[in-house]
Image (cartoon, rainbow, N blue to C red):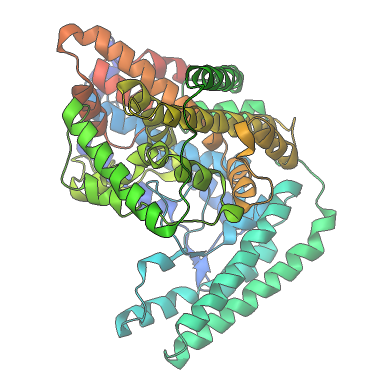
Length: 532
C-alpha cells in the first residue's frame, strides 16, 4: 500500500513538516472560520465573505505546504479532515451561500438537542441552545441568555441585507423556520415571566426583529422564482471534497434505487413469511409506552452483551433510556412515532447516535481534530450511516427472532430513508421541486406511514435541500460501513468479530467512513480516487 503523499519528493518534504504543525494550523483555522462580529452579530455580509474567501486560500496553501506522506496513517487522516473542512468553507462561499439563499440559516433559537454531533444543516454562529437551560433560570444563566438574545435583532437586520438569492423553495420553507422562532420566543417569554427587566427587554426585542423579518420575507416571496438545488456537478464535488464520500450523484441515485426496491421486496417477503401471525400490538397509552420502551432498551442492551456484538459501556443504557420518548395520540403520530408505537426496538436500534455522543463526552478522542464535531456536517456518512445500518444489522443478528412482525417495521424504515434520499437527489439536480420530492417520499413509504399533513415531511426535505448529501447519508453511509465490514472480515479471517469491528470503527471517531476504512484496513484507494 502506497500512501497518498508517498512519493520520494513528498517524503523528503515531510522532513520539514510535523504533526504539530498540522494541529497548530487546525487551531488557527477554527478561529479563522468563526466570522467577525458586526453590530453585535456574526458578519455574513458579501464584502466580508469575499475577503474571507481570499484569506481562505492562504490557509489552504499553508495546509498544502505540510507534507504528511511519512506520517502514521491516523495522522494522515487528520490532515485530510482539515483539508475537508477548508473545502467546506470554500464550497459554502462559492456555491451553497446559505446566508444569501436560505432564510432558515438565520434561525437562532434551538429548543431541542440534535442526536448528531452538531446541528444538521447550515447554522449561523450565534445559535442559542435553549434546551441547555434549566428553568427557573439562575442569575448566571439569566445573564448569559440575555446576552445571547441581544445578538438576534442585529443578525435579523443583517439578514435583510444579505438575503439576495433567488432560491424559491428554500425561501418559502425558510419562512416557517423564522415563524417558529417567533413562537419559541413567545413561549420563552411565558417561562421567564418572573425574571428581570433586562431579559424581558431582550426577548421582546428578539420577538420584534423576528416578526419584522417574517413580514419582509413574505413580501419578497413572490419575486423568488429560481431553483434551489445546486446541480449534479456541484453535488458530486461537495460529496467527494467536503464529505469525503467516494461516490457521484449518479452513483447515489443507483444505490438508493436499489435500496428502495430491496426494502419493498423484503417487506413483501416478510409479510408472506408472517401471514397468519397476529398483527403487532400498537401502543395505546402513556403507561404502555413507558413500559414497552423500557423493556425494549433492556432487551437491546442484554442482546448486545449476550451476543458479544459490541462492548457495552456503562453510559450506553442511560444514554438510550433517556431517549425512550413519549406516547403520541394516533391522530398526530408522524412516521417515527408510528414506527415506535408498533415496535420500539426498530427506532431504538437507530439510537446509536446517543452512544456516539456519550462516547464523545466520556471518552474524548486523543486527536485534537476529532474531539469536537467536524464542521459542515462532514461526519454525516459515519453518524447517520451507522445509526441506519444498525437497524438492519440487528435484524439479521436475531433481535426480532421472537417477534417476526417487528422485522417488517425495519424494512418500512429502510424504504422511507431510501425514498426521501432519492427525492432529495432529484431536488438537488433541480429535476424535482421540494414539493415533488416530498410527494415521492410519501408515495414510496409503505403503508401510508409518511403522512403529508405533518411537519416531519417538510422538515426532512427542507433539511436535505439545505444540506446537499445529508438526505442520502443514511443509505450511503450504511453501504460504506457494510463494505468496510466485509473488507475487514476478509482481511482478518478467523480473527474477525463484530465486537472488534465496532470497537475499531468507534475508536476512529465521528469522521467520514472513507477515512475510517483507510485507518482500519490501510487501503487508501478511495482517497486517491477522490483526489484525482
